[in-house]
Each structure stands twice: as C-alpha cells, then as structure tokens.
Image 1: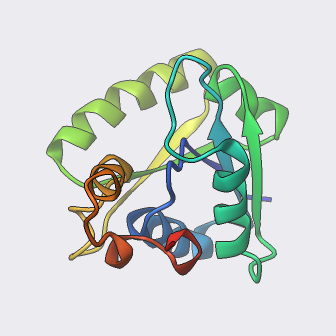
Image 2: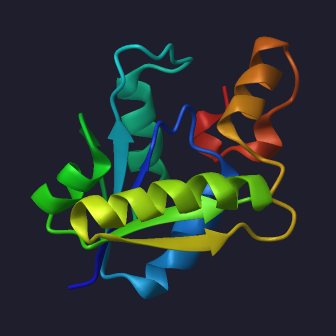
Length: 150
C-alpha cells in the first residue's frame, strides 16, 4: 500500500492545500492529513476546528484520513507505516526550504518526500495570507473550501 503523510498546521486549510491533496490522490492508496501540534505556536483556529475543516472537506474520500501528531514528522510516518511525505511547492523559496527538510528527513529515516507544484492560479494562496485577510476584514472566501467560510 502506497501511503503518504501530508503534514501541516492547516490554520486553515486552503484551496492550495486541496489542490495538492486532490492531485496526489491518484498517486497514493491513502493520504494522512496530519495536523502537527506545536504548543508554542499561536493558531487562529482551534485544533478541533482544523480537524473538522479537513474531515468535512474530505468526508466523501475514503482514502483520506485526518489525525493529529506531536514530535517529528518522520517518527509519525514510521508509526503510520507511511514511507512518503507529501509537500506542495508554490515557489522557488518553498523549494529551497522543503528540499532541506526533505533531505534531513531522508537522512533521519529513509522516508522520501514527494513534491507537487501548485497548480496555476493557486500559488499565491497560503494559510498566513488567509489569516491576515480574515484579521483585516477582507474577503478570503475565494482561497478556502466552503467549510472554512464563515
């Protein structure tokens, strides 16, 4: 079984995330959407809301599992028997950052990172931009799945 972990804070899930997830589905038998828990980070949305957003977005896709985890992503991957980490790339900056993490993860564990480039028209979307637009009262609805829209 080809299983991948797509880790993130998903604060909130965006159409950039769903673009990567949807395009990765033909590549894997199962994708685990894994919300990393970082006690030092301040989130806009509660953990419960973030789990609900993911579960609701993929309620009709049996190959998607949603869970949370603490610690190193590679340790979580081993616990889940998932030999792949799925990541999306929006820009060259993302590539440089993700390449270093992917190389470190492989050195630590032998777990491969699989990178998909965000589709045209979605590379500007990030959770941090969505949060900033929400904080400032702007229209963010074109960047997130229906379940996130207030």
